[in-house]
Amino acid sequence: MRTRNLGLIVILGFVLLLAGCVGCGAINLQKKGVGLEENIRGKWGNVQSEYQRRADLIPNLVSTVQGEANFERGTLTDVINARARATSVNVNPDDLSPEKLREFQQAQGQLSQALGRLLVVSEQYPNLRANDAFRGLQVQLEGTENRIKVARNDYNTAVQSYNTTIRTFPNNFYAGWFGFSQKGYFEADPGANQAPKVNFPQGGNSSSLPSAPSSAPAGNSDPNKR
Image (cartoon, rainbow, N blue to C red; front, side, top):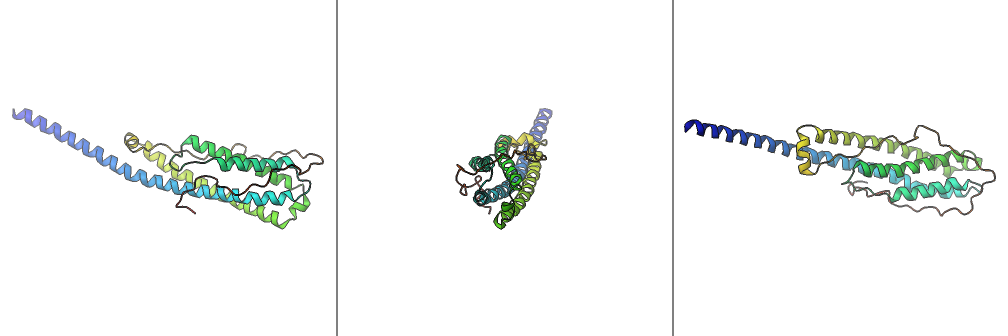
C-alpha cells in the first residue's frame, strides 16, 4: 500500500511540475509576444506614414506636370490611376498576414513604377526640368523613397524577431493559444533594379487628363503614430 501511495505521489508531483513548466512557458510567451507585436505595430505605422507622405506629394506633382503643354498624357494618367489604387488598399495592423502585405506592396509597387516612368519622361522637357517647383517635388520624392526603404527594413527586422520567437520550440506549442500567427515581410519589388521603360510618342499632348488627385489616406494608420 505504501509503495502504491508513493507511486501516486511521484506521478502527481510530476504532473504538477509539468503543468507548472507549461504554465510558465505560456505566460512568458504571452508577455514577450505582446511586446513584439506592439513593436511591429509601431514599425508598420512608420511604413504607412512614409507611404502617406509620398501619396500627399503626388497631387502637387501632377498639377505641376500638367502645366507642361505637350507632356505625354499616358504617363501622367498612369500615375493618377496608380495612386488611386494604392490609396484604396487598407491593411489592418491586427492582420498583417503575408497575403495582406503582398496586396499592399503590389499596389504601392505599381505606383513606384508609374512615378519612375514619369520622372524619366520629364527629362525630355527642358522647361519642366527648369521649373523650381518640379525640382523641389522631385527632391522630396527621392527623400521619401529613401525613408520608405528604411521604414520597410525596420519593419522586416521586427517581423523576423516576432516570427522566429513564435516558431521556436516550445513557443510554437503555445502560440496558437494566444492567437499569435506569422506576419508578412516586405519583399524586393519586381523589376526594382531595372530602369523604367518608356516610349516617347511624337506630338503627344496633355488633353483629356484625369483631374489631379486629392490627398487621401494610404491605409489605416496606427493612431499612436504621426
